[in-house]
Amino acid sequence: MGEEPLDPIPSFELPSTRPGAAWKRRRHDEEMEERTEQGWDTPINRRRFLDLARKLGAGAAASAWLYPAFLASCGRTALSRSGRPGFDVEGGAGGSAAINIGVISIYSGVGAFVGKLVDHGGDLAREQINRHGLPGANAFTPEGFPRFDVYQAQTAGGILGGKKINLIKRDDNLSAQVAVSAVQEMITRYDIKGLIFAGLYDDIYACKKLVQQFNIPSIAAYGDLYSVGQLWPKTDYRQLFQMFPPDSWGIELSLQEYAIRDRGYRRFAYLGDNTAVGAQGKRLIGETLAREGMDLSGAEQYNVGDVDMSAQLTRLRGTKSQVLLVWGIAGDTAHALENLKRLDAVYVDRPNALRASPWRPQIIGFEGGAAERTFAILAGDAARTGTMSYWYLGGLGYIPQFRAGVDAFKKRFGVAPTGGENNPADAVFLFAKAFEEAKGTEPARVINALETMKGMNFSSITPHSFTKDRHISIEKDDMVGITLERGKAARTSPPYELGTEFREFLAPGYIGPTQFTRFNMEGLLRKHPKLFGDIMLKGGYGTQCTKRPDPKSPYGFRLTNECKIH
Image (cartoon, rainbow, N blue to C red):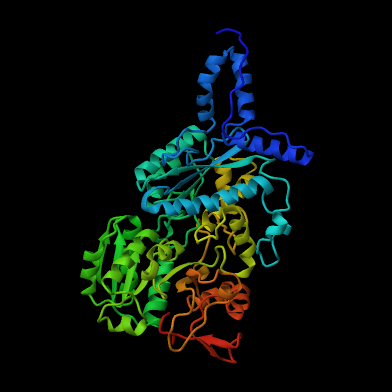
C-alpha cells in the first residue's frame, strides 16, 4: 500500500455543518458525538476511521473498501431486519461510553405493534436519561408524581458520570429459539449489562439458562412468571424481575369479583392462542372457576395470526355461555371480535348476555389484548362498549397528573400513547438507577441494587421496587379494571357518563380503553386513598357506572351495578 493521500470518504447520513451561533455549534458537536456512539455515518466516524487507517498505513482504495465494514462494526447496516434501508432494529452498538441494554420484543408479523410500543416507551426513556440523567429529588411532587418540567430542565445527561444508555433491540419472530439466539448475540457482540423481555412469554423460559450462565439482570416488562410460581424466590431465577401485572390477580378479580358476584354470570367459554399466554390463561381461568364450584362450558384454541376463527366460535355458541374469555394479543383479539360480528354474536348488554339465546356474550380479555387500544382500532365496530380487561394503576394518560408525560410523548412521536408504553420506559429507568446504585454494571451488584433500592417511576404512578424476597414490583391492590368506551356513553337505563378525561383531555370521539372504577375498589382505596379516592373518584375520572347519591360515603356517592353495559 502506498502513501497516497487519503481522500475524504463521503457521509450519506449526517453531514457536518458549522452553525454561526456558539451554542448551536456546541449542540451540533454533541449531536455528532451521540450519533457516532450509535454507529451513524458522521464526520466524526470518518475522522476516527481515517486516523486508524493512517496508523495502519492503508491507502485510499483500501480505506474506501474497509469503511463500510467499520460502520457495520459501529452498528450501521445496509438493511434493517425488515428489509428496509436504515438502521437495524437494535440501534447502534454504542461505544466505550455507552451502556448497552438488550431488548427482546416482537417487531414483525401479527405482533409487530408490540415492538412499536416497546420502541416508543424504551426510546423515549433512553433519550430522556441521556439528555437529563436520572430525576432528582425535586423532580417529583410530594405525592410522588413526576414533574416533567423540572426533570427536563436538568442538564447533566447520562449516568455514572455521563455514560449513555443504548438499547440493543432484537425481534423474537414469535419464536423462543430465535430469542435465545438473539440474546446470545447481544451478550457476545454487544456485552449487554441488562435485558428487557417484552416479547413472547415463552422467551423468558427459553433464555433462562443463558441469562443465568452470564448472570444478566433481566426485567420482564411483558411477561408473567409470578402466576405460575416461577419467580424468585420460588425458583432459582434470581436474575429476573417482573413488573407485568400477574394474570392470576387479574383473572381472580375479573371473574370472582366482577363477572360472578357483580354481574351474576354462571356460564363461561374460552378462546385462546396456542402460545404459553393462552395455555397459562386457560389453566388459571379453570382454577379460578373451580374455586367457585364452576368450570368452563367450552374451550377452543387458535394459532397466532389466524384470521378465521368462525369454526371455533360456532362450536362455542352451542355452549350458550354468558361470558367469552378471549386470551391473546391485540391483533388476534380483534380478529375474534370480527368473527363474532359475522356470526351476529357481538355483546349488547348484560340482560342479553344472561339470556344467552341468541348468543351475545360479554367479552373479558387478556391484558395484552383487550386492554390495548390497538385491538379496538383494528376491530372497528366489532369492538363494543363494555369489553373488559385489567391492568394496574399507572400508565400514561389516565389521570391529569400525567398529562405532561403524555405531552412529552406526543411531542416526540407525533401521536398519543396507546397503552403499554409505560412498562418498557420504566424498565429502562429501573436499570439506569440500578447501575447508579451499584456504581457500575457488575451483574451481582446490579441485581443487589434492584433488590434493595427504593424504586423508580418515570411513567407510572407508584415507583416500581423489589426486595430480596419479592421480585415483582406491584401488588394486588394496584390492579384496576379496564373497559372499552366508544367516544360517547352507550345508551342504557339507568344512564351513565363518561369519565372527566373525555371532557378535559382525550381527543373528541376517542375510542379505546379507560379505567373502570368499580373494579377492585376496596384494594385501591386501601393502598391509594388520595390518588384513587380524592383525585379519581371525587374528580369523576374513569367510567363510574352507576353513581347514586349517598351522604354516608366519603365522596357523597356510591357506585352500583345497575348499569346494563358494565
